[in-house]
Image 1 (cartoon, rainbow, N blue to C red):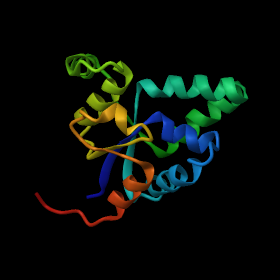
Image 2 (image 1 turned 90 degrees about the vertical axis):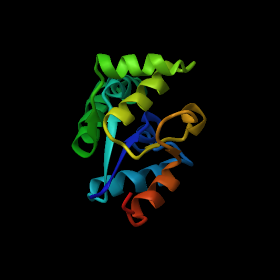
Image 3 (image 1 turned 120 degrees about the vertical axis):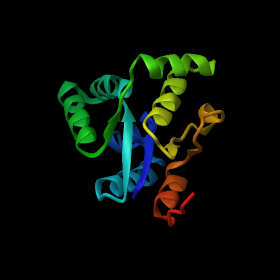
Length: 144
């Protein structure tokens, strides 16, 4: 059984847009998912934002490629009425972060990989930097 985690959009964008100094750690995390060391999920609502930001940065074809590459590696955490309702119940100022946290919980994720750990301080699973997420993936699983 491998680790299952939700990856925040900022980590994905670090890789695809080669945003330094974060690209290296985020790329290592991406590679761990690609190699099967862990199962990474992206919240469904982030896919449209990913396309928008990538296309704005480098054109529509680049946006299309970014979505295709991401979906070839990461699974999608569904966003439905129950997840949106759970996010509302959290009462967070940043609703987008609340939706990610609710999607992570509903999808059985063990942690959220993000560079914005402050946005997830009250999430049901811990928010880890890409570096800490990579360590968590590679640490031995313990039985509850």
